[in-house]
Image 1 (cartoon, rainbow, N blue to C red):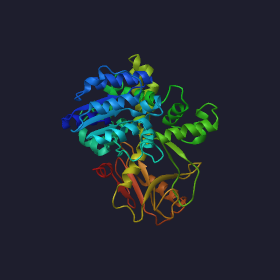
Image 2 (cartoon, rainbow, N blue to C red):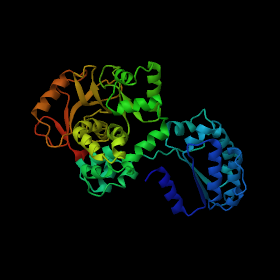
Image 3 (tube, rainbow, N blue to C red):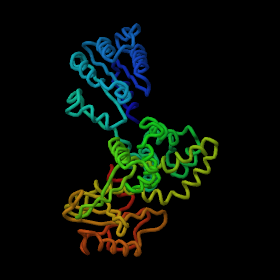
Length: 429
């Protein structure tokens, strides 16, 4: 379940008086009116105080809330989508701090603040902000690939596919039939304009950016496969470099995009960007471009595009998941403290997996490896020969550096440590 549903379930199980308010992207006056309506309809003992309330400011409404909650018994107040409220009232944090110190903290009341914008939510608790040290942070992460495997009763290979498509988002997984393959799910979900798979990306993009915002343009470009600064600048259509830099910074602050540099014993400026959420990457690659076809009942055209591009898309999309799984894995070469990839501007060499003692610049390379995520072709002698050649060009590696092969369909050679899909899923348990 997501953050909001998790809070709802917590309230239900507690049996305590509560208020659950969800802010919307609307003017301040409308937000205040919505809060009054939610508070008046709540089961707080003095909720009737809000029946005659007027929407003047958050100051007065929060003080009124402190009067409406039980004064000597536990209660729960949830404010969802707090970033929307802060956008409309930049002084809200200070007002919340004042009411918290003077009123809320003197009552046995649990205040839960929820927001999807990580940068804003993290900033609230920073030392230079009014609400500093008044809250404990909790990040609600998506379901892991092991969670997906268990929920859908899927083998490791299919669970990885499901995780790449859904990003571990419960609302999408709830529509995925138990035991269904990726193809079976997509053939049902993609043609449906109201499916969670289709609408989740629309909502996420609308919540974060105006339609023509520069970060949104960059996000689309990264989702389409542009990963370097120069290619993103070209895809932005002549936008000044400072605007591109600022857009990328915003995307990273929102945890929507991750930037990585090659891992080796030498520093590098060959930075690459990728979408952090695999579901959003899938949505930007296939669903968003296909929305016009889906809306006119031609989802079959989108499905054909997915079929044509699936193997190549999955081969790139699975790499971050594999690296994160390896970071969690026991039995890697001693001193391995970082896992990334290595590449040059010419992509010669380009190595999928590099283990080292530290990052971003290593003192010691502890392992190199290759990812072959294909349906019916195991890691073979050709792949091994290519990996050995690339290792010889890798700064910090030599002939004694251990070789690893992460393969979806097995390994047919000796001289490498083979990591299976089952290994990757099990490390998340």
